Image (cartoon, rainbow, N blue to C red; front, side, top):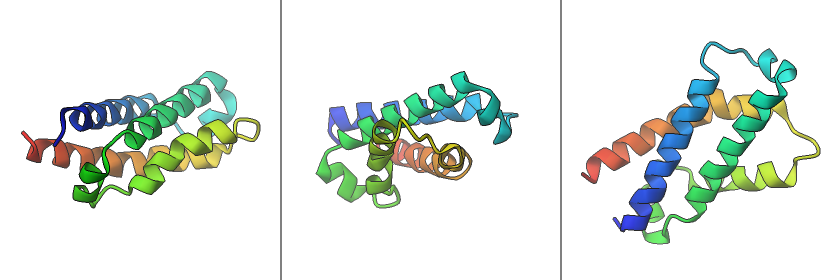
Amino acid sequence: MKLNDRKYLNNMLEMSREAMELVQNKAREDLDRDKQLTLSLLKYLEIIGSAASRISRECQNGCEPIPWDQVTEMKQQVIHTYLEIDLDWIWEKMEKELPALSKALEILLAQEK
């Protein structure tokens, strides 16, 4: 694994963990009331998607459990839909996709040590 790939994978893992930590003990309705929470989560998703887009094709091809297209598309979703933010979409990422991504990244990075 290239050094830059490891750096971006670690960044994705760290940002995923931080985003999930923000929603601990929260419910979907909290996004309706807390604009700062919503914007923070959007930024985390953007950063994760941006880091994923910098992972080499070689690394992506060797990391099959990670849905690279979906992860990199998160950034595009965030930056192109800022006028119509879909709070359900954000919550789905927090509830389902980030925990799975985080687990896959942990396994991948542990294998590379």
